[in-house]
Length: 113
Image 1: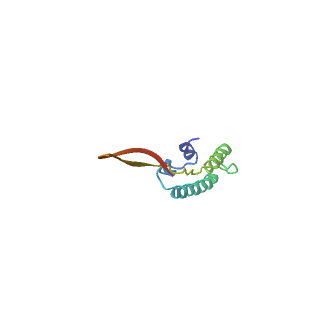
Image 2: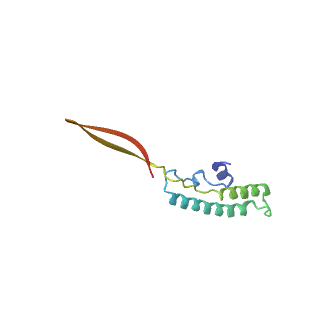
Image 3: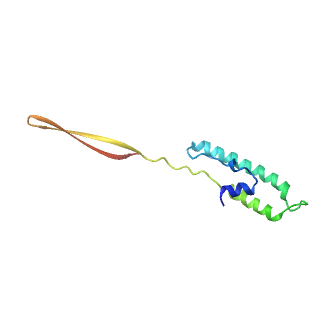
């Protein structure tokens, strides 16, 4: 199920779940926890509207709402380790040859962990 479908089932606006990709992991986790609180609150509202024991209740709709909420509550933020930095290392070799000095430079890349 896509997040847009889940939001439609829960009768929430499509921008209710908006976590930017380049956000600091701590803020992303905080935003996700806030979103889960919104989901819990919305479920309570929808129970009052669709519960099967009510006069205009809808058992199928209530099952769909509960399943959707259960799936959304499983969402987690995965924090990936940072990519290793690439560092350019230049090694200069100086050799003395009889009357002249010659410098050689070899550049290569290595991982800096």
